[in-house]
Image 1: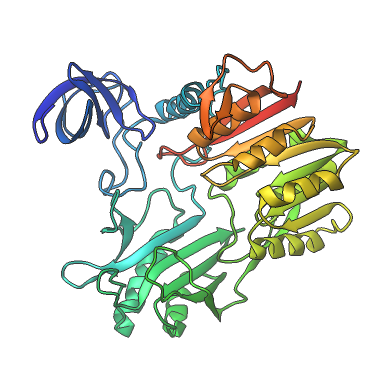
Image 2: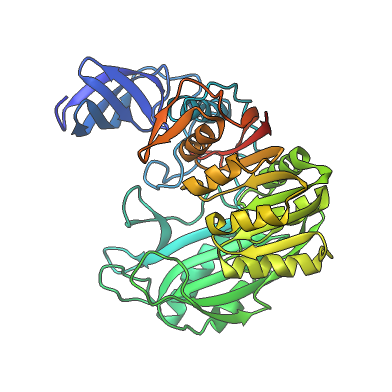
Length: 463
């Protein structure tokens, strides 16, 4: 294919990014915003060997699964990939994404359960994080980054967010205009306001304004009080040049700076940088599925990458005791506070350190007890040393939670013996005869409707 030329083809499937896959005589084209069964025209934007990355120009044959996107900046904003597909197709895409990743990357042939749907397909996100900048005319803008860029696409609301997002965006812009403040210009390194971050916790709003230097937010408090009854407002100062949202300097401008909430019987305090899954309903369903899979009064649960300790506390109530391992000191401090709030002094034990360094210590502490291991790593997956330690742990059950099907497939392949490490490289084996574990179930959860992302729960039993 030739760059900038137009082609016509039929979409045979969706790729891992939610884009349409089109086979041609010259190779394979990947074109966003089209659906299987559609005949489309597309322009070749990038040609790399036999792979072509294209832009949709016309749909000649419509899929019965095509819908009208509700968002006016869909296709411009980098947040959603699937608003043009109905929910039935979205759920099927996510199940197939997990199934294909396990087979192609991990060498694992296993039945993947249908994806657990979200009750809300829009308005489900409890967290908002938007960059603030200026447009080409010097006017303040709040929005999302366009795909593969730091160009802000201005928005007045986001369809995935809860209703309060529209009011909050408008309030921030009014405050900036009133006080003569400018959005941050990443190129020139000037401007005051960098990010708007907010989260709803139990019907209460926790709002943070990230600025390049300390800002007087009292006028914003007055504006917010007209629309919101229960909120707290913080100013985070981030003078760095990098892409990290928060700096180290915090100021409480209104309220206490945190809220106390209850999740499935567990009391916890949530601050601006406390990790909580963005979809409240699916988070509860997922965590209940994890605790049900681990429930055993005679077993000790080992929760790896435990964060603020929410799941560790649930496991402590479902098992004899639970150990949480987490590398971020602030998260471990939150877990210790949660432990006190819930009276789990003798059942919940939080350890600060890298999982790969603390795992053997935890296993030695729990020697002699029946064990279940829970792993909820970041997108990059588990370190190889952690996979090896879990494989030889002797745990009766291993439960994996993952937001990245590719790294899940890699880690699961190593645990099940369909992948082996040879001279530092991963190679597929002829089977899993030498593995200690076998897969009981693989279940996708749709934590992120309208997007390509999927959360997956895998339960393994010791052979």
